Amino acid sequence: MKEERYFSTFQLILLALFAALVVVAKIALRLPLQMPGHSGIFWMAIIVVAAGVVPKTGAATLVGLTSGLIAAFLGMGDLGALNTFLSYTIVGVGTDLALLLLRDLDNLVVDALVGILGHIGKFLVKWAFGAMTGAPVGFIALGLLRAAVGYVVFGALGGLLGGLTLQALRKAGFFAYLEEKR
Amino acid sequence: MTQKSRILIAVGLIVLIVSLVLGLEVLRRQRSVLTRAGDEVVLQPGSIPIYVDGSLAAGFTPEGLGELETVSFVDDEDGKTQEGWMLRDVLGLYLNTAALDSDASIMVSSSSREKSVTLTWAEVDDPVNWVMFDVSGRGTLKLVSVLERLDVRDEWVQDVDKIGVVTR
Image 1 (cartoon, rainbow over the protein chains, first blue to last red):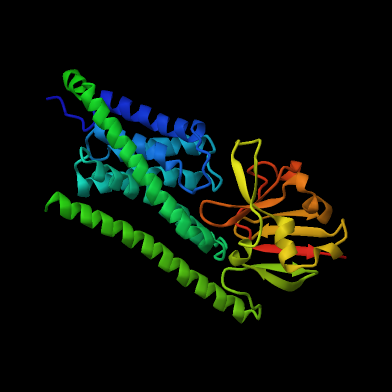
Image 2 (cartoon, rainbow over the protein chains, first blue to last red; image 1 turned 180 degrees about the vertical axis):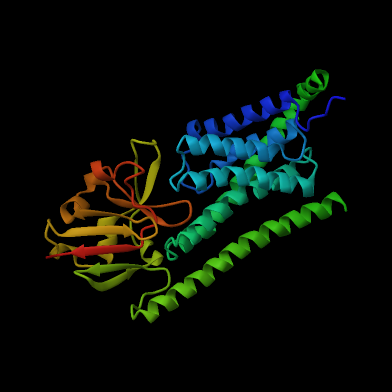
Protein backbone atom coordinates (compact mmCIF):
# COMPACT_ATOMS: atom_id res chain seq x y z
CA MET A 1 0.00 0.00 0.00
CA LYS A 2 1.31 3.41 -0.97
CA GLU A 3 2.04 5.61 2.03
CA GLU A 4 0.38 9.05 1.91
CA ARG A 5 2.93 11.82 2.35
CA TYR A 6 2.09 14.89 4.41
CA PHE A 7 3.20 17.34 1.70
CA SER A 8 2.91 16.36 -1.95
CA THR A 9 5.87 17.00 -4.26
CA PHE A 10 3.86 19.77 -5.91
CA GLN A 11 3.26 21.44 -2.53
CA LEU A 12 6.93 21.11 -1.59
CA ILE A 13 7.92 22.77 -4.86
CA LEU A 14 5.47 25.60 -4.20
CA LEU A 15 6.81 26.08 -0.67
CA ALA A 16 10.42 26.07 -1.90
CA LEU A 17 9.49 28.76 -4.44
CA PHE A 18 7.89 30.84 -1.70
CA ALA A 19 11.04 30.42 0.42
CA ALA A 20 13.20 31.65 -2.45
CA LEU A 21 10.79 34.53 -2.96
CA VAL A 22 11.17 35.57 0.70
CA VAL A 23 14.95 35.82 0.26
CA VAL A 24 14.69 37.59 -3.10
CA ALA A 25 12.19 40.06 -1.65
CA LYS A 26 14.54 40.77 1.25
CA ILE A 27 17.42 41.44 -1.15
CA ALA A 28 15.65 43.21 -3.99
CA LEU A 29 12.68 45.06 -2.54
CA ARG A 30 13.57 48.12 -0.56
CA LEU A 31 11.32 50.70 1.01
CA PRO A 32 12.83 54.10 1.74
CA LEU A 33 11.62 53.88 5.33
CA GLN A 34 13.79 54.35 8.36
CA MET A 35 11.57 52.07 10.44
CA PRO A 36 12.70 48.79 11.97
CA GLY A 37 10.90 45.75 10.61
CA HIS A 38 9.64 47.43 7.45
CA SER A 39 10.70 44.50 5.28
CA GLY A 40 7.99 42.51 7.09
CA ILE A 41 5.47 44.02 4.71
CA PHE A 42 6.95 41.84 1.96
CA TRP A 43 7.88 38.66 3.69
CA MET A 44 4.82 38.35 5.90
CA ALA A 45 2.72 38.77 2.75
CA ILE A 46 4.64 35.93 1.10
CA ILE A 47 4.44 33.67 4.18
CA VAL A 48 0.69 34.27 4.55
CA VAL A 49 0.15 33.51 0.85
CA ALA A 50 2.26 30.34 1.23
CA ALA A 51 0.18 29.25 4.24
CA GLY A 52 -3.01 29.94 2.25
CA VAL A 53 -1.90 28.13 -0.89
CA VAL A 54 -0.67 25.09 1.08
CA PRO A 55 -3.18 25.02 3.96
CA LYS A 56 -1.39 22.51 6.17
CA THR A 57 0.21 22.99 9.56
CA GLY A 58 3.95 23.25 9.04
CA ALA A 59 3.79 24.88 5.60
CA ALA A 60 4.83 28.30 6.91
CA THR A 61 7.51 26.72 9.11
CA LEU A 62 8.93 24.93 6.08
CA VAL A 63 9.06 28.20 4.14
CA GLY A 64 10.74 29.93 7.11
CA LEU A 65 13.22 27.10 7.58
CA THR A 66 14.14 26.93 3.89
CA SER A 67 14.44 30.70 3.48
CA GLY A 68 16.50 30.81 6.69
CA LEU A 69 18.93 28.24 5.30
CA ILE A 70 19.23 30.12 1.99
CA ALA A 71 19.67 33.49 3.73
CA ALA A 72 22.26 32.09 6.17
CA PHE A 73 24.28 30.58 3.32
CA LEU A 74 24.09 33.87 1.40
CA GLY A 75 25.54 35.64 4.43
CA MET A 76 22.56 37.92 4.90
CA GLY A 77 22.07 39.90 8.10
CA ASP A 78 24.73 41.54 10.22
CA LEU A 79 24.41 39.41 13.34
CA GLY A 80 25.74 36.15 12.00
CA ALA A 81 24.36 33.07 10.28
CA LEU A 82 22.63 31.60 13.34
CA ASN A 83 20.74 34.83 13.98
CA THR A 84 19.69 35.04 10.34
CA PHE A 85 18.60 31.40 10.25
CA LEU A 86 16.59 31.66 13.46
CA SER A 87 15.03 35.00 12.45
CA TYR A 88 13.67 33.56 9.22
CA THR A 89 12.65 30.25 10.76
CA ILE A 90 10.80 31.80 13.68
CA VAL A 91 8.68 33.86 11.28
CA GLY A 92 7.38 30.60 9.81
CA VAL A 93 6.96 28.93 13.20
CA GLY A 94 5.14 31.99 14.58
CA THR A 95 2.84 32.04 11.58
CA ASP A 96 1.99 28.35 11.99
CA LEU A 97 1.33 28.77 15.71
CA ALA A 98 -0.87 31.80 14.99
CA LEU A 99 -2.78 29.77 12.41
CA LEU A 100 -3.35 26.97 14.92
CA LEU A 101 -5.18 29.53 17.03
CA LEU A 102 -6.83 31.68 14.37
CA ARG A 103 -7.29 29.19 11.51
CA ASP A 104 -9.34 31.22 9.03
CA LEU A 105 -7.16 33.04 6.47
CA ASP A 106 -10.26 34.27 4.60
CA ASN A 107 -10.73 36.92 7.28
CA LEU A 108 -8.52 40.00 6.74
CA VAL A 109 -8.38 40.75 10.49
CA VAL A 110 -7.05 37.24 11.03
CA ASP A 111 -4.51 37.75 8.22
CA ALA A 112 -3.25 40.92 9.92
CA LEU A 113 -2.98 39.17 13.29
CA VAL A 114 -1.20 36.19 11.76
CA GLY A 115 1.19 38.67 10.11
CA ILE A 116 1.85 40.37 13.45
CA LEU A 117 2.38 37.15 15.40
CA GLY A 118 4.70 35.73 12.74
CA HIS A 119 6.70 38.93 12.46
CA ILE A 120 6.93 39.50 16.21
CA GLY A 121 8.78 36.18 16.42
CA LYS A 122 11.60 37.79 14.44
CA PHE A 123 11.57 40.76 16.81
CA LEU A 124 11.90 38.34 19.74
CA VAL A 125 14.88 36.59 18.16
CA LYS A 126 16.65 39.91 17.49
CA TRP A 127 16.00 41.09 21.02
CA ALA A 128 17.00 37.78 22.63
CA PHE A 129 20.27 37.72 20.68
CA GLY A 130 20.96 41.29 21.80
CA ALA A 131 20.30 40.36 25.41
CA MET A 132 22.38 37.17 25.26
CA THR A 133 25.38 38.77 23.58
CA GLY A 134 25.33 41.60 26.11
CA ALA A 135 24.54 44.34 23.61
CA PRO A 136 24.48 47.74 25.27
CA VAL A 137 21.36 48.13 27.31
CA GLY A 138 21.27 51.87 27.07
CA PHE A 139 20.34 52.85 23.60
CA ILE A 140 18.35 49.72 23.02
CA ALA A 141 15.58 51.42 24.99
CA LEU A 142 15.61 54.33 22.57
CA GLY A 143 14.60 52.10 19.73
CA LEU A 144 13.03 49.06 21.34
CA LEU A 145 9.53 50.46 21.59
CA ARG A 146 9.87 51.97 18.12
CA ALA A 147 11.14 48.60 16.85
CA ALA A 148 8.26 46.73 18.50
CA VAL A 149 5.73 49.12 16.96
CA GLY A 150 7.46 48.78 13.58
CA TYR A 151 7.34 44.98 13.71
CA VAL A 152 3.66 45.01 14.70
CA VAL A 153 2.60 47.57 12.08
CA PHE A 154 4.55 46.09 9.17
CA GLY A 155 3.64 42.54 10.20
CA ALA A 156 -0.03 43.56 10.11
CA LEU A 157 0.38 45.28 6.74
CA GLY A 158 2.21 42.24 5.36
CA GLY A 159 -0.52 39.92 6.64
CA LEU A 160 -3.18 42.13 5.08
CA LEU A 161 -1.32 42.22 1.77
CA GLY A 162 -1.05 38.43 1.88
CA GLY A 163 -4.75 38.11 2.66
CA LEU A 164 -5.70 40.39 -0.22
CA THR A 165 -3.41 38.39 -2.52
CA LEU A 166 -5.14 35.17 -1.44
CA GLN A 167 -8.53 36.74 -2.16
CA ALA A 168 -7.31 37.80 -5.62
CA LEU A 169 -5.96 34.30 -6.28
CA ARG A 170 -9.29 32.81 -5.21
CA LYS A 171 -11.19 35.14 -7.55
CA ALA A 172 -8.81 34.29 -10.39
CA GLY A 173 -9.61 30.59 -9.90
CA PHE A 174 -6.15 29.59 -8.67
CA PHE A 175 -7.49 27.37 -5.90
CA ALA A 176 -9.88 25.63 -8.31
CA TYR A 177 -6.83 24.99 -10.53
CA LEU A 178 -4.96 23.54 -7.54
CA GLU A 179 -7.88 21.21 -6.79
CA GLU A 180 -7.78 19.94 -10.38
CA LYS A 181 -4.03 19.32 -9.99
CA ARG A 182 -4.56 16.92 -7.06
CA MET B 1 -14.50 28.81 20.84
CA THR B 2 -15.78 31.56 18.55
CA GLN B 3 -13.58 33.34 16.03
CA LYS B 4 -14.06 36.57 17.99
CA SER B 5 -12.62 34.93 21.11
CA ARG B 6 -9.67 33.63 19.13
CA ILE B 7 -8.99 37.11 17.75
CA LEU B 8 -9.15 38.59 21.25
CA ILE B 9 -6.72 35.95 22.53
CA ALA B 10 -4.34 36.75 19.66
CA VAL B 11 -4.50 40.50 20.41
CA GLY B 12 -3.86 39.77 24.10
CA LEU B 13 -0.92 37.56 23.16
CA ILE B 14 0.64 40.35 21.08
CA VAL B 15 0.23 42.89 23.88
CA LEU B 16 1.66 40.38 26.38
CA ILE B 17 4.74 39.59 24.27
CA VAL B 18 5.56 43.27 23.60
CA SER B 19 4.99 44.23 27.26
CA LEU B 20 7.12 41.31 28.44
CA VAL B 21 10.04 42.31 26.22
CA LEU B 22 9.85 45.97 27.21
CA GLY B 23 9.50 45.04 30.90
CA LEU B 24 12.47 42.67 30.78
CA GLU B 25 14.49 45.38 29.05
CA VAL B 26 13.72 47.84 31.85
CA LEU B 27 14.87 45.24 34.40
CA ARG B 28 18.00 44.63 32.37
CA ARG B 29 18.78 48.32 32.32
CA GLN B 30 18.27 48.65 36.08
CA ARG B 31 20.58 45.72 36.74
CA SER B 32 23.19 47.23 34.45
CA VAL B 33 23.07 50.52 36.35
CA LEU B 34 23.62 48.68 39.65
CA THR B 35 26.61 46.84 38.23
CA ARG B 36 28.13 50.04 37.00
CA ALA B 37 27.51 51.75 40.34
CA GLY B 38 29.36 48.87 42.01
CA ASP B 39 32.33 49.62 39.81
CA GLU B 40 32.22 53.21 41.04
CA VAL B 41 31.38 54.47 37.59
CA VAL B 42 28.29 56.57 37.90
CA LEU B 43 26.40 56.77 34.65
CA GLN B 44 22.81 57.59 33.94
CA PRO B 45 20.65 54.65 32.88
CA GLY B 46 20.90 54.17 29.16
CA SER B 47 24.07 56.14 28.67
CA ILE B 48 27.19 55.32 26.69
CA PRO B 49 30.37 56.38 28.51
CA ILE B 50 32.73 58.85 26.91
CA TYR B 51 36.27 58.60 28.24
CA VAL B 52 38.82 61.35 27.72
CA ASP B 53 42.42 60.25 28.25
CA GLY B 54 41.19 57.26 30.23
CA SER B 55 38.93 59.19 32.60
CA LEU B 56 35.17 59.08 32.43
CA ALA B 57 34.13 62.46 31.11
CA ALA B 58 30.45 62.02 30.35
CA GLY B 59 27.63 59.63 29.65
CA PHE B 60 26.04 59.97 26.25
CA THR B 61 22.27 59.59 26.75
CA PRO B 62 19.48 59.06 24.22
CA GLU B 63 17.87 62.27 25.46
CA GLY B 64 20.85 64.25 24.19
CA LEU B 65 20.15 63.17 20.64
CA GLY B 66 17.01 65.29 20.54
CA GLU B 67 19.18 68.39 20.48
CA LEU B 68 21.14 67.23 17.45
CA GLU B 69 20.45 67.60 13.76
CA THR B 70 19.58 64.36 12.00
CA VAL B 71 21.66 63.61 8.92
CA SER B 72 21.68 60.82 6.37
CA PHE B 73 23.58 59.33 3.46
CA VAL B 74 23.10 56.31 1.21
CA ASP B 75 25.77 53.66 1.66
CA ASP B 76 27.41 52.25 -1.45
CA GLU B 77 27.37 48.62 -0.31
CA ASP B 78 23.67 48.07 0.31
CA GLY B 79 22.18 51.25 -1.11
CA LYS B 80 20.54 51.73 2.28
CA THR B 81 19.95 55.10 3.86
CA GLN B 82 21.99 55.50 7.01
CA GLU B 83 20.27 58.06 9.17
CA GLY B 84 21.33 59.41 12.51
CA TRP B 85 23.68 61.83 14.20
CA MET B 86 27.22 62.90 13.37
CA LEU B 87 29.80 61.65 15.89
CA ARG B 88 31.37 65.13 15.99
CA ASP B 89 28.00 66.60 17.04
CA VAL B 90 27.59 63.94 19.73
CA LEU B 91 31.06 64.68 21.10
CA GLY B 92 30.33 68.39 20.86
CA LEU B 93 27.43 67.93 23.27
CA TYR B 94 29.73 66.77 26.05
CA LEU B 95 33.26 67.92 25.23
CA ASN B 96 34.96 71.11 24.14
CA THR B 97 35.74 69.81 20.67
CA ALA B 98 37.28 73.14 19.62
CA ALA B 99 40.20 72.28 21.89
CA LEU B 100 40.84 68.93 20.20
CA ASP B 101 43.90 68.68 17.95
CA SER B 102 43.28 67.32 14.49
CA ASP B 103 45.39 64.25 15.33
CA ALA B 104 43.55 63.50 18.58
CA SER B 105 42.22 59.95 18.37
CA ILE B 106 38.62 58.93 18.81
CA MET B 107 37.97 55.27 19.51
CA VAL B 108 34.47 53.89 19.18
CA SER B 109 34.00 50.33 20.39
CA SER B 110 31.51 47.58 21.02
CA SER B 111 32.31 45.02 23.72
CA SER B 112 29.55 42.65 22.64
CA ARG B 113 30.78 42.63 19.03
CA GLU B 114 34.44 42.84 20.04
CA LYS B 115 34.87 45.53 17.41
CA SER B 116 36.38 48.97 17.52
CA VAL B 117 37.63 51.66 15.21
CA THR B 118 40.04 54.49 15.89
CA LEU B 119 39.75 57.67 13.90
CA THR B 120 41.48 61.02 14.11
CA TRP B 121 39.51 64.07 15.13
CA ALA B 122 40.22 65.52 11.66
CA GLU B 123 38.43 62.55 10.08
CA VAL B 124 35.52 62.73 12.50
CA ASP B 125 35.19 66.50 12.12
CA ASP B 126 35.17 66.47 8.32
CA PRO B 127 31.47 66.34 7.26
CA VAL B 128 32.45 64.79 3.92
CA ASN B 129 33.38 61.58 5.79
CA TRP B 130 29.87 61.13 7.28
CA VAL B 131 31.21 59.60 10.48
CA MET B 132 27.87 59.09 12.17
CA PHE B 133 25.69 56.91 14.35
CA ASP B 134 22.72 55.13 12.84
CA VAL B 135 20.13 53.47 15.09
CA SER B 136 19.89 49.76 14.33
CA GLY B 137 16.61 47.89 14.23
CA ARG B 138 17.21 46.75 17.80
CA GLY B 139 17.68 50.31 18.93
CA THR B 140 21.43 50.16 19.46
CA LEU B 141 23.86 52.54 17.80
CA LYS B 142 26.15 51.58 14.96
CA LEU B 143 28.98 53.72 13.70
CA VAL B 144 29.01 54.08 9.92
CA SER B 145 30.91 56.28 7.50
CA VAL B 146 32.00 56.63 3.91
CA LEU B 147 35.64 56.35 5.01
CA GLU B 148 37.32 53.41 3.33
CA ARG B 149 37.90 51.50 6.57
CA LEU B 150 34.34 52.03 7.78
CA ASP B 151 32.17 51.93 4.68
CA VAL B 152 30.96 48.31 4.58
CA ARG B 153 28.82 46.31 6.97
CA ASP B 154 31.73 44.17 8.24
CA GLU B 155 33.63 47.30 9.18
CA TRP B 156 30.79 49.15 10.90
CA VAL B 157 30.86 49.12 14.69
CA GLN B 158 27.45 47.85 15.76
CA ASP B 159 26.09 47.95 19.32
CA VAL B 160 28.44 50.77 20.35
CA ASP B 161 28.96 50.88 24.12
CA LYS B 162 32.05 53.05 24.61
CA ILE B 163 33.65 56.14 23.14
CA GLY B 164 37.23 57.01 24.02
CA VAL B 165 39.07 60.21 23.20
CA VAL B 166 42.84 60.46 23.49
CA THR B 167 44.00 64.06 23.29
CA ARG B 168 47.70 63.51 23.95
